[in-house]
Image 1 (cartoon, rainbow, N blue to C red):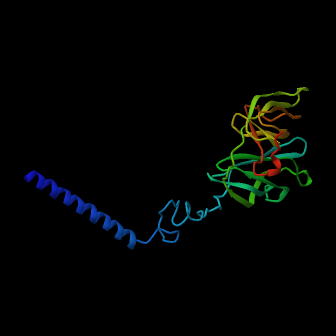
Image 2: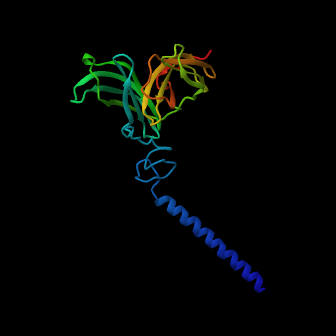
Image 3: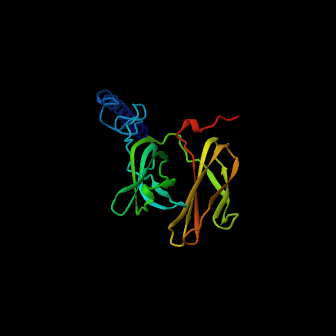
Length: 265
């Protein structure tokens, strides 16, 4: 008898608990403001406060950190010309520069500009690349002693389906050219990307044992299909002041330029 009474009492207590829980939930649901995209809170599926998810996309600061110049120098290009070499780095992980303008000045010891060259380039997020200008002539054939490099009009773009192309170099070799008076570099570039490119630029930097630049040159490969490869040859018809101990090959193609993407067959 007592056991039946206890069971019935327990059932009643549990029923009250369930009842008041449901009532409490309903009251909370009715008096609590519904989550919106204007409540000043990060809720729902929002990526930030009142943005992302079911709300409008969050604003992205598309002004990146300044590009970093990690190297700038110039070397003799043979005769009375000079070759400029600049290496830049993009410190932004998710923002690339679809384009930027640059200015190169070669100056004498007193700061007088002897040669000027302007151009436009690009750089991917978290990437480094070389900018080179070959065969710069100086005012009255004077010898420069310093180089300036300035960047302006950077057009930052958020990383959206932009991947660094897989352009790899194989069988690269350095040695004397055919007449024995100059130097020669040759190698094979293979496009291991999934895209076809209209233009691929190959830049070669030669360095001495102290890692100083001795020579630079570049060439262009056209209509490089995915999984296709092509050979390149670069020559310097003059001798360097020191022995070449290392070389870098920087292969570039502009993935921001829609005109640079070939239509697949």
